[in-house]
Amino acid sequence: MKCKRCTDKAIVQLRSHNAAFCKPCFVFFFQRTVERAIAREHMFARDERVLVAVSGGKDSLALWDVLVDLGYETEGLYLGLGIGAYSSASEQKARAFAEKRGLPLQVVPLDETEDGLGIPAVAAATRRPPCSACGTFKRHHFDRAAFEGGFPVLATGHNLDDEAARLLGNVLHWQVPYLAKQQPVLVPTHPRFARKVRPLFRTSELESATYAFLRGIDYVVEECPNSHGATQLVYKDILNRLEHSMPGSKLAFVIDFLSRGQPLFASAPEADLRECERCGMPATGDLCGYCRLVAEVGRRHAQAVAHS
Ligand code: AMP
Ligand code: FES
Ligand code: ZN
Image (tube, rainbow, N blue to C red):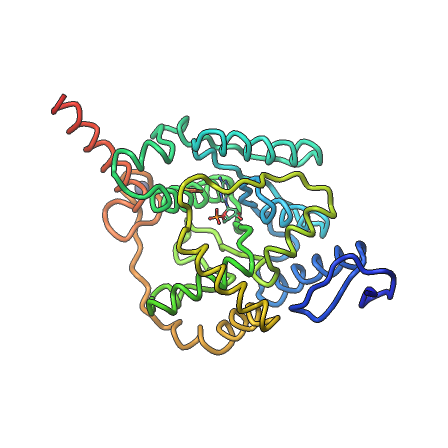
Protein backbone atom coordinates (compact mmCIF):
# COMPACT_ATOMS: atom_id res chain seq x y z
CA MET A 1 0.00 0.00 0.00
CA LYS A 2 1.50 3.30 -1.10
CA CYS A 3 0.93 6.83 0.14
CA LYS A 4 -1.41 8.67 -2.24
CA ARG A 5 0.59 11.88 -1.88
CA CYS A 6 4.27 10.87 -1.90
CA THR A 7 4.18 7.13 -2.86
CA ASP A 8 6.20 6.14 0.24
CA LYS A 9 4.96 3.17 2.28
CA ALA A 10 1.51 4.02 3.65
CA ILE A 11 0.62 3.38 7.29
CA VAL A 12 -3.04 4.51 7.27
CA GLN A 13 -5.77 3.48 4.88
CA LEU A 14 -8.85 5.67 4.57
CA ARG A 15 -11.45 3.74 2.63
CA SER A 16 -13.89 6.64 2.82
CA HIS A 17 -11.45 8.75 0.79
CA ASN A 18 -10.18 5.84 -1.30
CA ALA A 19 -6.70 6.79 -0.11
CA ALA A 20 -3.75 5.69 2.00
CA PHE A 21 -1.10 7.91 3.59
CA CYS A 22 2.33 7.75 5.23
CA LYS A 23 2.70 9.49 8.60
CA PRO A 24 3.71 13.02 7.47
CA CYS A 25 1.19 13.00 4.61
CA PHE A 26 -1.67 11.89 6.91
CA VAL A 27 -0.84 14.71 9.34
CA PHE A 28 -0.79 17.11 6.38
CA PHE A 29 -4.08 15.70 5.03
CA PHE A 30 -5.84 15.98 8.42
CA GLN A 31 -4.64 19.51 9.09
CA ARG A 32 -5.51 20.63 5.56
CA THR A 33 -9.04 19.21 5.86
CA VAL A 34 -9.55 21.18 9.08
CA GLU A 35 -8.00 24.33 7.59
CA ARG A 36 -10.28 24.12 4.54
CA ALA A 37 -13.35 23.54 6.70
CA ILE A 38 -12.49 26.70 8.69
CA ALA A 39 -11.99 28.75 5.52
CA ARG A 40 -14.93 27.44 3.46
CA GLU A 41 -17.44 27.74 6.29
CA HIS A 42 -16.06 31.14 7.39
CA MET A 43 -15.58 29.82 10.92
CA PHE A 44 -13.02 32.39 12.04
CA ALA A 45 -10.35 34.69 10.74
CA ARG A 46 -6.63 34.73 11.52
CA ASP A 47 -6.94 37.64 13.93
CA GLU A 48 -9.79 36.18 16.01
CA ARG A 49 -9.00 34.57 19.37
CA VAL A 50 -10.50 31.09 19.64
CA LEU A 51 -11.65 29.47 22.88
CA VAL A 52 -11.27 25.70 22.41
CA ALA A 53 -13.45 23.52 24.64
CA VAL A 54 -11.28 20.53 25.54
CA SER A 55 -12.63 17.45 27.28
CA GLY A 56 -9.29 15.60 27.50
CA GLY A 57 -10.47 13.27 24.71
CA LYS A 58 -8.87 12.66 21.33
CA ASP A 59 -11.07 14.95 19.23
CA SER A 60 -10.82 18.18 21.17
CA LEU A 61 -7.09 17.74 21.89
CA ALA A 62 -6.44 16.92 18.21
CA LEU A 63 -8.40 20.05 17.29
CA TRP A 64 -6.40 22.23 19.68
CA ASP A 65 -3.15 20.75 18.32
CA VAL A 66 -4.17 21.54 14.72
CA LEU A 67 -5.24 25.10 15.53
CA VAL A 68 -1.96 25.81 17.34
CA ASP A 69 0.04 24.29 14.47
CA LEU A 70 -1.86 26.38 11.95
CA GLY A 71 -0.90 29.49 13.95
CA TYR A 72 -4.25 30.49 15.47
CA GLU A 73 -4.37 32.29 18.82
CA THR A 74 -6.14 29.90 21.17
CA GLU A 75 -7.00 29.28 24.79
CA GLY A 76 -8.29 25.97 26.16
CA LEU A 77 -11.36 25.63 28.37
CA TYR A 78 -11.86 22.53 30.50
CA LEU A 79 -15.02 22.04 32.57
CA GLY A 80 -14.67 19.81 35.62
CA LEU A 81 -18.05 18.06 35.56
CA GLY A 82 -17.45 16.27 38.87
CA ILE A 83 -17.95 12.78 37.41
CA GLY A 84 -15.56 10.89 39.74
CA ALA A 85 -12.48 9.18 38.32
CA TYR A 86 -13.52 9.96 34.73
CA SER A 87 -13.39 13.71 35.40
CA SER A 88 -10.07 13.51 37.31
CA ALA A 89 -8.45 11.52 34.48
CA SER A 90 -9.73 13.81 31.74
CA GLU A 91 -8.67 16.95 33.61
CA GLN A 92 -5.21 15.52 34.04
CA LYS A 93 -4.93 14.85 30.26
CA ALA A 94 -6.13 18.34 29.36
CA ARG A 95 -3.72 19.95 31.85
CA ALA A 96 -0.77 17.80 30.72
CA PHE A 97 -1.43 18.67 27.04
CA ALA A 98 -1.47 22.41 27.80
CA GLU A 99 1.55 22.33 30.12
CA LYS A 100 3.70 20.36 27.69
CA ARG A 101 3.06 22.91 24.95
CA GLY A 102 2.98 26.03 27.16
CA LEU A 103 -0.64 26.80 26.17
CA PRO A 104 -3.14 28.73 28.32
CA LEU A 105 -5.89 26.54 29.80
CA GLN A 106 -8.84 27.75 31.84
CA VAL A 107 -10.16 25.07 34.21
CA VAL A 108 -13.68 25.54 35.61
CA PRO A 109 -14.55 22.96 38.29
CA LEU A 110 -18.35 23.12 38.29
CA ASP A 111 -18.71 22.17 41.95
CA GLU A 112 -16.46 25.11 42.90
CA THR A 113 -18.40 27.74 40.93
CA GLU A 114 -20.84 30.04 42.77
CA ASP A 115 -23.66 27.53 42.21
CA GLY A 116 -21.43 24.71 43.47
CA LEU A 117 -23.10 22.01 41.41
CA GLY A 118 -21.40 19.12 39.61
CA ILE A 119 -23.37 16.96 37.18
CA PRO A 120 -24.04 13.99 39.54
CA ALA A 121 -25.57 16.35 42.15
CA VAL A 122 -27.89 17.96 39.58
CA ALA A 123 -28.93 14.59 38.15
CA ALA A 124 -29.62 13.16 41.63
CA ALA A 125 -31.65 16.17 42.78
CA THR A 126 -33.76 16.50 39.63
CA ARG A 127 -33.94 12.76 38.85
CA ARG A 128 -33.04 13.53 35.26
CA PRO A 129 -30.58 11.59 33.15
CA PRO A 130 -27.11 13.08 33.82
CA CYS A 131 -26.57 13.78 30.10
CA SER A 132 -29.49 16.18 29.82
CA ALA A 133 -28.27 18.27 32.79
CA CYS A 134 -24.74 17.96 31.44
CA GLY A 135 -25.71 19.45 28.05
CA THR A 136 -27.38 22.46 29.69
CA PHE A 137 -24.44 23.02 32.06
CA LYS A 138 -21.82 22.69 29.33
CA ARG A 139 -23.61 25.12 27.00
CA HIS A 140 -23.99 27.68 29.79
CA HIS A 141 -20.38 27.52 30.93
CA PHE A 142 -19.04 27.55 27.35
CA ASP A 143 -21.11 30.66 26.55
CA ARG A 144 -20.19 32.35 29.80
CA ALA A 145 -16.45 31.69 29.54
CA ALA A 146 -16.40 32.94 25.93
CA PHE A 147 -18.36 36.08 26.87
CA GLU A 148 -16.32 36.88 30.00
CA GLY A 149 -13.03 36.22 28.22
CA GLY A 150 -14.03 38.34 25.20
CA PHE A 151 -13.68 35.43 22.74
CA PRO A 152 -15.66 35.90 19.51
CA VAL A 153 -15.41 32.17 18.73
CA LEU A 154 -15.91 28.95 20.66
CA ALA A 155 -14.69 25.73 19.02
CA THR A 156 -15.65 22.18 20.01
CA GLY A 157 -14.24 18.84 18.89
CA HIS A 158 -17.46 17.33 17.46
CA ASN A 159 -16.39 15.06 14.61
CA LEU A 160 -18.03 13.58 11.51
CA ASP A 161 -19.34 10.57 13.45
CA ASP A 162 -20.98 12.90 16.00
CA GLU A 163 -22.56 14.99 13.26
CA ALA A 164 -23.80 11.96 11.28
CA ALA A 165 -25.30 10.36 14.42
CA ARG A 166 -26.99 13.63 15.39
CA LEU A 167 -28.36 13.99 11.86
CA LEU A 168 -29.71 10.44 11.84
CA GLY A 169 -31.46 11.03 15.18
CA ASN A 170 -32.90 14.35 14.00
CA VAL A 171 -34.18 12.80 10.76
CA LEU A 172 -35.63 9.70 12.42
CA HIS A 173 -37.74 11.92 14.67
CA TRP A 174 -38.14 14.80 12.19
CA GLN A 175 -36.77 17.29 14.68
CA VAL A 176 -37.29 20.31 12.42
CA PRO A 177 -35.97 22.99 14.84
CA TYR A 178 -32.84 20.89 15.46
CA LEU A 179 -32.34 20.27 11.74
CA ALA A 180 -32.54 24.04 11.26
CA LYS A 181 -29.67 24.46 13.71
CA GLN A 182 -27.49 21.57 12.60
CA GLN A 183 -24.63 23.49 11.02
CA PRO A 184 -20.87 23.52 11.56
CA VAL A 185 -21.09 27.26 12.33
CA LEU A 186 -23.75 28.79 14.55
CA VAL A 187 -23.92 32.52 14.11
CA PRO A 188 -24.64 34.30 17.43
CA THR A 189 -28.26 35.34 17.93
CA HIS A 190 -27.40 37.62 20.87
CA PRO A 191 -24.42 39.93 21.56
CA ARG A 192 -23.48 37.81 24.59
CA PHE A 193 -23.14 34.66 22.49
CA ALA A 194 -19.96 33.67 20.67
CA ARG A 195 -19.89 32.08 17.21
CA LYS A 196 -19.91 28.31 17.78
CA VAL A 197 -17.85 26.28 15.37
CA ARG A 198 -17.08 22.59 14.79
CA PRO A 199 -13.92 22.48 12.65
CA LEU A 200 -13.72 18.65 12.78
CA PHE A 201 -17.14 18.09 11.20
CA ARG A 202 -15.54 16.60 8.08
CA THR A 203 -13.04 14.31 9.83
CA SER A 204 -14.07 10.99 11.34
CA GLU A 205 -13.46 9.60 14.81
CA LEU A 206 -10.98 7.16 13.27
CA GLU A 207 -9.09 10.05 11.66
CA SER A 208 -8.84 12.09 14.87
CA ALA A 209 -7.74 9.00 16.84
CA THR A 210 -5.08 8.33 14.19
CA TYR A 211 -3.99 11.99 14.21
CA ALA A 212 -3.78 12.05 18.03
CA PHE A 213 -1.74 8.84 18.03
CA LEU A 214 0.68 10.02 15.32
CA ARG A 215 1.17 13.39 17.05
CA GLY A 216 1.88 11.75 20.43
CA ILE A 217 -1.19 13.27 22.09
CA ASP A 218 -2.03 11.55 25.36
CA TYR A 219 -5.82 11.53 25.73
CA VAL A 220 -8.41 9.95 27.98
CA VAL A 221 -9.62 6.76 26.32
CA GLU A 222 -12.51 5.91 28.64
CA GLU A 223 -15.95 7.26 27.80
CA CYS A 224 -18.09 9.03 30.36
CA PRO A 225 -19.52 6.37 32.71
CA ASN A 226 -23.04 7.80 32.47
CA SER A 227 -25.12 6.33 29.73
CA HIS A 228 -23.86 9.34 27.80
CA GLY A 229 -25.56 9.32 24.46
CA ALA A 230 -26.60 5.64 24.60
CA THR A 231 -28.90 6.33 21.65
CA GLN A 232 -26.10 8.17 19.88
CA LEU A 233 -23.99 5.03 20.21
CA VAL A 234 -26.71 2.97 18.51
CA TYR A 235 -26.82 5.48 15.64
CA LYS A 236 -23.02 5.47 15.39
CA ASP A 237 -22.98 1.70 15.22
CA ILE A 238 -25.58 1.65 12.42
CA LEU A 239 -23.67 4.32 10.50
CA ASN A 240 -20.42 2.39 10.91
CA ARG A 241 -22.05 -0.71 9.44
CA LEU A 242 -23.29 1.34 6.51
CA GLU A 243 -19.83 2.87 6.13
CA HIS A 244 -18.27 -0.59 6.11
CA SER A 245 -20.41 -1.69 3.15
CA MET A 246 -20.43 1.70 1.43
CA PRO A 247 -17.27 3.66 2.28
CA GLY A 248 -17.80 7.42 2.20
CA SER A 249 -21.52 7.27 3.01
CA LYS A 250 -21.14 8.95 6.41
CA LEU A 251 -19.39 11.95 4.88
CA ALA A 252 -21.88 12.14 2.00
CA PHE A 253 -24.83 11.96 4.45
CA VAL A 254 -23.59 15.00 6.38
CA ILE A 255 -22.15 17.04 3.50
CA ASP A 256 -25.18 16.54 1.21
CA PHE A 257 -27.51 17.41 4.07
CA LEU A 258 -25.61 20.65 4.68
CA SER A 259 -25.62 21.67 1.03
CA ARG A 260 -29.08 20.45 -0.03
CA GLY A 261 -31.21 19.59 3.00
CA GLN A 262 -30.32 22.06 5.74
CA PRO A 263 -31.21 25.25 3.77
CA LEU A 264 -34.79 23.93 3.48
CA PHE A 265 -35.11 23.90 7.28
CA ALA A 266 -33.13 27.04 8.02
CA SER A 267 -36.09 29.41 7.98
CA ALA A 268 -37.51 28.10 11.28
CA PRO A 269 -38.31 31.21 13.39
CA GLU A 270 -35.74 32.28 15.99
CA ALA A 271 -36.91 32.70 19.56
CA ASP A 272 -36.65 36.26 20.90
CA LEU A 273 -33.81 36.43 23.39
CA ARG A 274 -33.50 38.69 26.43
CA GLU A 275 -31.05 38.61 29.35
CA CYS A 276 -31.50 36.13 32.20
CA GLU A 277 -32.55 37.91 35.42
CA ARG A 278 -30.17 35.81 37.46
CA CYS A 279 -26.98 35.38 35.43
CA GLY A 280 -27.35 37.88 32.59
CA MET A 281 -26.79 35.36 29.81
CA PRO A 282 -29.30 35.16 26.92
CA ALA A 283 -32.65 33.57 27.82
CA THR A 284 -36.00 32.94 26.16
CA GLY A 285 -37.93 33.66 29.41
CA ASP A 286 -37.08 35.44 32.68
CA LEU A 287 -34.46 32.82 33.47
CA CYS A 288 -32.09 30.95 31.13
CA GLY A 289 -32.27 27.14 30.95
CA TYR A 290 -29.24 26.82 33.22
CA CYS A 291 -30.66 29.06 35.96
CA ARG A 292 -34.02 27.28 35.76
CA LEU A 293 -32.22 24.00 36.36
CA VAL A 294 -30.20 25.44 39.28
CA ALA A 295 -33.43 26.82 40.79
CA GLU A 296 -35.07 23.40 40.43
CA VAL A 297 -32.16 21.80 42.31
CA GLY A 298 -32.60 24.42 45.07
CA ARG A 299 -36.33 23.65 45.33
CA ARG A 300 -35.72 19.90 45.50
CA HIS A 301 -33.10 20.34 48.23
CA ALA A 302 -35.49 22.55 50.22
CA GLN A 303 -38.27 19.93 49.88
CA ALA A 304 -35.90 17.19 51.00
CA VAL A 305 -34.90 19.21 54.10
CA ALA A 306 -38.56 20.00 54.89
CA HIS A 307 -39.45 16.28 54.73
CA SER A 308 -36.50 15.09 56.80
P1 AMP B 1 -19.36 15.37 23.96
O1 AMP B 1 -20.57 16.20 24.15
O2 AMP B 1 -18.86 14.72 25.20
O3 AMP B 1 -19.45 14.46 22.77
O4 AMP B 1 -18.21 16.41 23.57
C1 AMP B 1 -18.28 17.21 22.44
C2 AMP B 1 -17.29 18.34 22.56
O5 AMP B 1 -17.64 19.17 23.67
C3 AMP B 1 -15.86 17.90 22.82
O6 AMP B 1 -15.18 17.58 21.64
C4 AMP B 1 -15.28 19.12 23.50
O7 AMP B 1 -14.94 20.10 22.54
C5 AMP B 1 -16.46 19.64 24.31
N1 AMP B 1 -16.43 19.11 25.70
C6 AMP B 1 -17.00 17.97 26.17
N2 AMP B 1 -16.77 17.83 27.49
C7 AMP B 1 -16.05 18.92 27.88
C8 AMP B 1 -15.50 19.37 29.12
N3 AMP B 1 -15.64 18.67 30.25
N4 AMP B 1 -14.82 20.53 29.14
C9 AMP B 1 -14.66 21.26 28.01
N5 AMP B 1 -15.15 20.87 26.81
C10 AMP B 1 -15.84 19.73 26.74
FE1 FES C 1 -21.91 14.73 30.39
FE2 FES C 1 -21.27 12.22 30.50
S1 FES C 1 -20.13 13.84 29.67
S2 FES C 1 -22.97 13.14 31.39
ZN1 ZN D 1 -29.20 32.43 33.80
